[in-house]
Length: 461
Image (cartoon, rainbow, N blue to C red):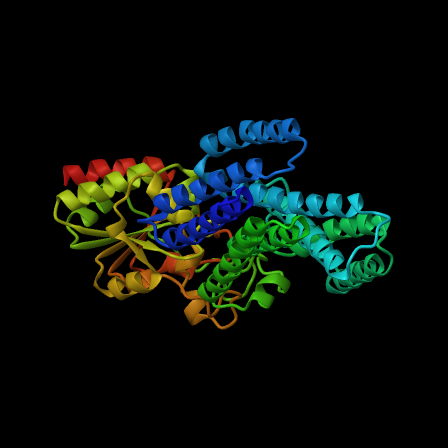
């Protein structure tokens, strides 16, 4: 077997590893193994790249890899769970930006020569999609990090301006096709960056998880395009897998929100409204507040308890205490399960990652459909830091912006306990009338502190 054939076979093995990794990543139980298999495939692909005959600038490549490792490894290991969405957005954007720079560099290297139309198209796709992904991910990072407001940023005539910007981008793409001009391509790159910013600014609130998934798909497509430019089969395969899986995940999350992708991207959802469509602060009546001791007794003598995690659980770093509470209840003979909504948190799978960090048994994790089947026989639903994904306005209020979104039906449980810091709305900015329901008890305070008190109260009951 020749060296070239051996390298191609190794690339095929790496591609198979990526496919198997995606399959394993579809379940929390096998996700860790999927990550390891994907990392092994990428390590093999990198090794074969160094073995490719004619490879130049070897020292620069090694330096770049070392710099990337020095930045990436500490960032991944030290990131707080609350900042995980920001990290995902940042890393995703870097991938798109890298793909755009690769396409630009390869095009400029061939400047002055006759370049085939299909090669220019590959370069254009890499530059446009990569820059939109990079700029969009940067704005997403700023929104999640609260460097700018997380609400939709809109202005009169915004859609018209964005449409004009899109037409200008297409015009410069046509100019690059006609002239093979590097200058036109650089201008196109800058315009694509502006388009990425304009594309993301009007998106906010509960739509952030879908946005992250969509931008991830964009990055995959940009990487695939750069793979064509570099004649790299492994990049084409890896980028296509990321692009396809990201697109499928985006569609699944759109369905989980009960809205079309176009509605999510162009409706500027996230203005602060109540469940009935009025302005924030109109209220919904009085609420019933409880004490950890009273709620602890209720939980201790329940037969079945659902724990509904949300972003507030991540903010308080309370996942380990939530598991301790579940273990304490289980030891008393109480059946406990975690009800997981697909868009809970601020990125796809956020709650699964959060609970996996606390080594919550996979058997206790229930997806939305399974959890909703169990909810009518549940004695108590403990909602920890979640709001939008349990809001009955999605079912009962046609005037609500979230009307039609599938939710966790915690209102069907015999008792509902909301663990919140205050009565402020969730990330989507929508008031929740369930807070005022007679069966609902509010427990105000820091999630970690309150859960610790609940653990003590259950043990003392």
